[in-house]
Image (cartoon, rainbow over all chains, first blue to last red; front, top):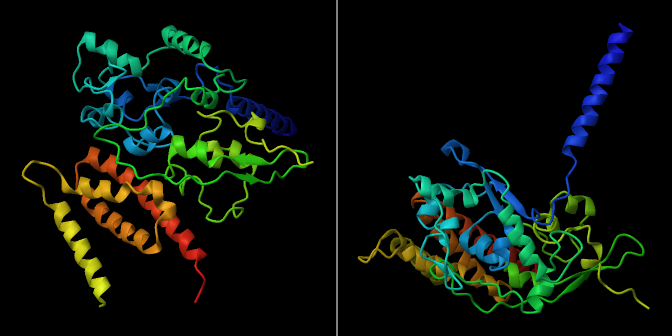
Length: 266
Length: 102
């Protein structure tokens, strides 16, 4: 009887170790950082899931354009995009409609309800059957020209934009609304909880230019009064608050000095 | 019922009526209303309590219209409306809390 109990305990413990190891987050390679796999209806339609590369889009467009004006959700699979939505010119079809252009180059058309063998080559541009070395190569070719960063996908996007290397499109005809002049809120400091760790400088200017107001408030940052919400790094690493974007698409939160940037007094 | 309230009710009724009808060109008037209502998010911080309340009333009226649209339109515009309505509600709460209690 004791032996059975012992075997059960060993098996239970072993399973726990394996489960723990299986759920440990694997660090994404630079070209994979920010990739999102979308699989709501693809497999039902006999297609592989969509592998969406954020870098391809964020080098040309603001976050706001896609996540506010076009209406993409902030988490994978939350938007429930269907081929028919794209075909009607919504979501991916807002640009991938076969007639829109970017820098005078026609953007390939997204989904179709029927397709030929030739069309299928277009389908697998998004519905990725397997890893495409050309996609990786394209990333590293682009990365070479950009300011470097240690973490994430190795690109300092902020410096790239400041240096005029990126000119992000923030308006899509027929989709975006005529915007009123935005009143940008001042930057502010948040006190660090750990002694010796510099305080956080939060730049409203940087965030509102790329995101607008409604992408963050109130869905991500609900607190009305400054200091009312107590943020913890555990919550942030768990994907809350800053963690909604940082670690997933924006630079990772392990890059401490990017946020904890207030020079020490004295 | 005060004159202001009567005015607001009439405006909302007119908006709803306008949105439910379609022009001969196939242009959907609710889209114009959507643009007028949700294009002010960038200046939400500077809007008065009354302006925010009015925008929220328009959002509520728009929601009813968008809910009657076909699925793709409904999905996109309900999401977009939710973002702008939530921001206005957030700002209204902020501004209301700032005002001294009588």
